[in-house]
Amino acid sequence: MNLVAAVKHRKSIRNFKPDPVPKDVIEEILAIARRAPSAENSQPWEFTVITGDILDDIRQANIERLRSGAPCHPDLLSKGWPPGSVYRRRQIAIAKQLFQLMEISREDKKGRIQWMERGFRFFNAPAAIVILSDRSLPYPRPLFDMGALTQTICLVSLNYGLGTCISNQGIMYPDVLYDLAGIASSKRIIISIAIGYPDEDFPANRVVSTRDPLDAITTWRGFG
Image (cartoon, rainbow, N blue to C red; front, side, top):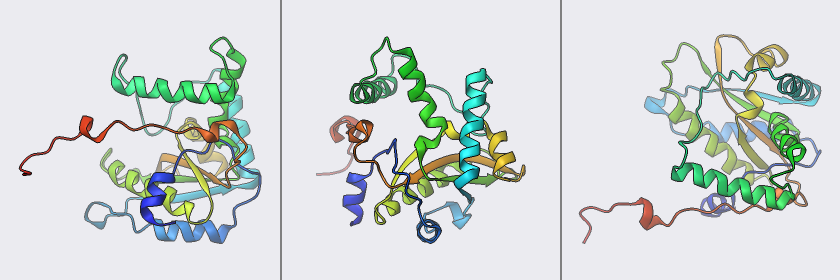
């Protein structure tokens, strides 16, 4: 798949086949993706790649904490989109499309809870890539570089027939990962990427997100 096709084709995968992803495949993806740009070639990233029983234990611990009502406390703080903003409207539009595909009605509270929990289980992916930065780095300086790296991982993965979902739900309880995945406390958990072979029959994997017209978001100056 060429680069332009990959950019157009890539989308979030929210359920995966149980087939394991070979270590050497993920290793090759990360080796290529580390060519992503970073400020002054600082390369402010590290990886912890999780699979098997350890990932299952993390899923279970996440769900137990979520169901107990434990407050989320991610290392990377984020806020919701401003009410009434175009960003919030876009979020609602994609959620409506997902719920329609999954046949989850507004009144189906159980279905909506189960859908939310899917993210805390890394969307049932056979592996997860956790992207870290060192706590010594001035926050939030590395985040721009982390975004470039994350996008590169997702695009390169397509070359190997793999799907991805960039997600912060699985890292909402960072102490779970520090403990069960053996991540050093000197590291900051930035984001996770669920990775695996897409379940093509899963309804939500048929979602097609829209983009605003280029004219609506671009201002041209100095062109004839």
